[in-house]
Amino acid sequence: MAVESEIKSQTNSIAAPEHEIILVRTPEERQQCYDVRIEVFHVEQNFPLETEIDERVLFLFFSLRTNAAHFLLRSTPSLTPIGTIRACRGKNYYKLTRLAILKDYRKYHFGAALVRFMHSWVARDAVQDPDVNAPPPASVNIVCHSQIPVKGFYAKFGYISEGDEFDEDGDPHQKMVLRLPIGSGLSTAESSLRPSS
Image (cartoon, one colour):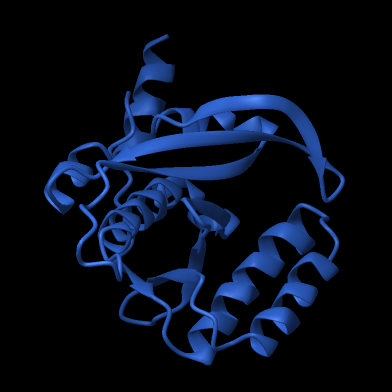
């Protein structure tokens, strides 16, 4: 029992390497996101490569559309890509997609850091309505299709399961939804971004 506590304590005290999370702005940065996703989803988890390749072709074809924001986690100062997440804008919601962290870096809880960063971006983006006469929303829904083994990860942020499990790319998934409070600004939203213990 004491040995397990000591191991758990040592694991929790591992310092994360220096890193940064950026909003992707260049084709090179977007390619780094794709490289991480291909490594995680295709090489490691055996999802079809076409799910990443087809999307890349469509994204390049419709590159002027601004309905998706990619975020890249990279180590510093080397700028080596180690994780990514994407937020897609829907009509009245956002969708969290393509969260991927390279295997050797998962122990640093970078997935949670990417989700918090994306939530902050959504909170800012949701109040940038072109209709200046419309009041800012009090909250915004964020939807994700979680792989079944990681539903608990999203639940820690307040995501709630909706509907039945379904197949996506040959693997069972669950629709999960978070109502992200926006309040009067980012500080209100940021207080709700920490996962519960």
